[in-house]
Amino acid sequence: MLAPPLQLVDSFLLNYTVGDVLLFGFVVGILGILPMRSLRVLGIHTISIGALLLILPTGMLEPNAGSFLGTAFQYKVVGIVLLALAPVLYAVGRR
Image 1: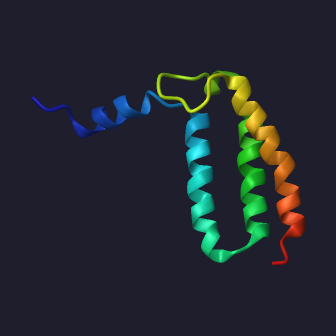
Image 2 (image 1 turned 120 degrees about the horizontal axis):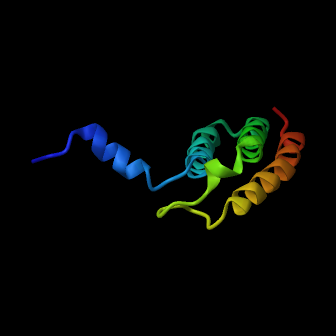
Image 3 (image 1 turned 30 degrees about the horizontal axis):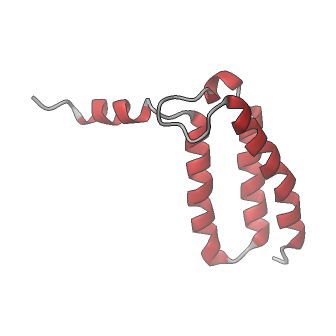
């Protein structure tokens, strides 16, 4: 017998953390920003994802079976790198 669709989605999502979802959203957001060719918007997007990765509690970033990174500390480091890169992107952008 087939499982209800919600259970299939739930069993798929249990392999990932909030950090994985944020990194995936970051990449998808970049793809959405590229046609605009705006470094300022890209800088704001980068600041928001970096800040979220730093603000989130470490318990929400603990890796699961399908996680992109190995430890919660690595997610925090990615957040710091994004926060360091974002002001440069914003300052270089003209509009």
